[in-house]
Length: 182
Image (cartoon, rainbow, N blue to C red; front, side, top):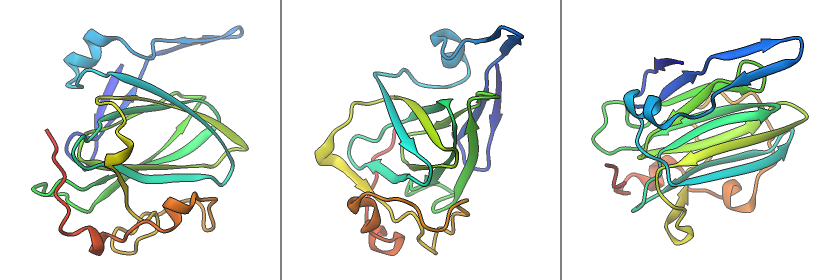
């Protein structure tokens, strides 16, 4: 596997080795020892979501129980984004995005202390993520997907959003938020 650093410390692109021929392909989607050697923490929860074209989920984070996430797509294609919301980070407020697909099978690691979101650009997509902490619904928060202060260049202009995501606070409203990141 190849591990690629991004402009945000701790946000990584992981390209697993994909072995393919006329029958299909094989890849090792996770190997605890190799991922630990690459600097990733242990994971405690796996999630799977299925969405249709135009759905945008995010930008989500947990305040007191921040989650690192290793994300990938097994079907379709999504544009995935990490936003650094760690108070003492030199890249606070910056974002990194990647196109995840079921052809090259890249993975994206978003460390604890970053907000996360994705939008589906194919007809449908199956999205998987491993988390470093358990989901705490009472601790969840979000940041507006199209906040001009962040300036994410989404490949979609009018996404399908949940009510929570459509009315999420702006970056300026979260300025006093203290994220507890390891």
